[in-house]
Each structure stands twice: as C-alpha cells, then as structure tokens.
Length: 436
Image 1 (cartoon, rainbow, N blue to C red):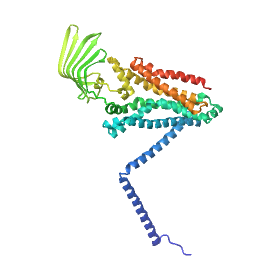
Image 2 (tube, one colour; image 1 turned 90 degrees about the vertical axis):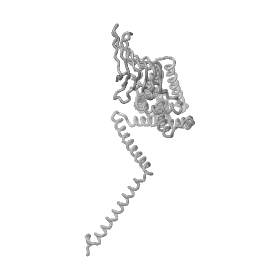
Image 3 (cartoon, rainbow, N blue to C red; image 1 turned 30 degrees about the vertical axis):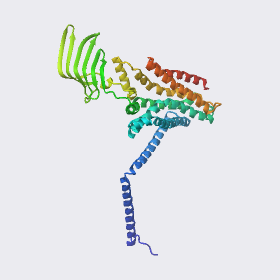
C-alpha cells in the first residue's frame, strides 16, 4: 500500500500558496480598515456607536453593582422590582415632560430667539442644555409624586398589592423600597441643585437677559456705599466695571460709633491677576488716623491692600441667585448681611429651597403610596386626579409662600418650609388612615 508523503514538494507549495493567500487577505483587510478610519465623513457616527456601546456596558456594570449593593443591605427581589419600577417611571416622566417643555418653550420664544440674533449654538448649548436640568430639578417633586401614584395604582389594579399583603407584608415594610428610592432622588436633586446646575445657569441667565428679556447690561455704578467689615464702611463715587476701576474712594473705620481712621484715594483698581480675592490697588491715597485730639496723616502714590468687596458686589443681575452654588450663596448672604444690604429675601428663599425641595421627595412619596395602595371605584383615574390636585396645591403653596417672603417681609425659612410642614401633617394623616 502506497503512503502519501506530507513533506512532498507539491504539498509544501500548496501550503505556501495558502499562506500567501491568507497574508494577502489579511493585508487587504488591514488596508480596508485603514481606509475606513481615514474616512472622516463616517467617523462621527462610528464614535457615536462606540460611545453608545460604552454607555451600554457602563449601564450594565452599574446595574450589576447596584444589584449586589441592594442584596447586601437586605433588599429582596420584590424590593428591587418596586425600586426599579419607581425610578424608571420617574425618569420616563422627566423625559416626556422635558420634550414637551422644550417644544412649548421654543414655540413661545421663537420670535425673540430668531429676531434677537441668537446663534443656533447659543440656543442649544447655552440655553436649552442648561434649561433642561434646571427645569427637571425644580419640578422633581411633581415627577416623584405622579410617578409613585402611577406605578402603585398599576400594582393595585393588578391585585399585586393584595398578594403582598396576603404574604404578610405590612404597609410599613412596603414603604421601604419607596423611601430608599426617594432618598436616592433627594440626594441627586440636592447635589445637582446645590453644586452642578448653578454653574450651567450662568450661561442660561446671561442668554435670557441678552436675547429674551432684553435687559441692558449695566457696567457703571455711582455712589456705592457698603459695610465691608464690622465698623468699616467703604464709599466709591463712580465705578466702571469694564475696566474694574473707580474714583472718589474712601474707607472709614469706626470704634464705638467714633471715627478712628479714614482712607481716601483718587482712584481704586481691582487686581484681577492677584492670587487671592479682594485685592485692590489705590492711587494717590491719604490715610488719616485719629488718636484723641491728635491726628496722623500718611500719603503716597500707590497702595496695594485687601478690602472685602468685589466688583460684582456693586451690580445686581436678575436671576443671580440661581448662578451661585450653595457655599457661594451662603457666603454672599452672610457678607450682604454684614454690609446691611437690603433685598436679601430672594437669596434667602433660594438658599432654603436648596434643602426643602429634596426633602419634599419623602413627604410626597408617602402621600402617593398611601393614596394609591388601595383599589378605588374610579380606578387609576381617581388616584391620579387626587394626586394631581395635591401636587398643584403644593406648587401653588410654594409660590405663594415665596411671594410672602420676598414681598411681605416674612422670614424666608418659615415661608419656604411651610408647604413641607403642612404636607408632612397631611402625609402623617394618610399614613395613620392606611391599613397597616
């Protein structure tokens, strides 16, 4: 029997041809891939697809980590189901309402946007990219309330709540995933409202003042007088914000209502390049120090000093409180109180709203669950109707109380927290009325 020799020349030549053919195919693939990478017209879509895949893997990873975390804190599969439905309904409502709000807002302001000379980049990046998060964060309590009612009513209509109670789950135990979801929403709402959204609101407020409200930017101020420290009063006759320079400056220091020192200068210049805030340069200055009946005078051409004031303190921009982070807002209120400035109620209301709005998520979640946990004759419509009535009452109460603080002189803390206190009592009433 004749055996085939694998090392024959014919066999070796066939192997070499196959290897050469494979190398040619691989080289063609590499060249094709290189040409595709050089095709810049298709590159953005490839980057978007790659970004989409990356976001998908990131979402799956976060979902897996979230599941492990909830299992560690004792959440059952039913708890994860309720929490997932609650949060997904909340996000869905935000998305739907955001699209509707953009359509109506654009339709309302299209004339001002087009005739005002705003560019498309400014409209979408400066205005709407910052308008959407601010609106969603402001109406977060509304979305929480409606989301809880919609989802829980759906559970009750399918008799799933009855099945949970039949298995021995109490109303208090049922609230556990809801309150955990409310805590997550409250933390995100507080973080965004206190630190993230104010930075974006700078561009949005400037855009509104320039193109929509047509407010004239004021760059000069006259007769500025403010208390910059305890017993220290500054006065500037005229200040030009464009060059950060003023004239007719004086700084008076008092002790027990007696003048002890007076600093005057012909011009004052703010140092924008200094490595710290409140750095000013005085030109042609004179310092008069009073010691009883004696007086000491010091003069000079230039003096670099620190005065606790900034050019932005001399000008008020409509909506300025929305552009400050929580620490900046707190520092601004304290500084203006020290100076004896008026009109701080708007800033104080904004400060307390940063805390009151996230806290309302717990109150409205409890009311929503208590309203919709039982079947009603009117079905889902009755629960949603009651929920919408309570929601709009809450928003109306917030608006009225804030108006009392800004226009009637009510304490800002009382005005802002009053709706939460009232609805907390309502929530406690619903909680006691609901079968445990």
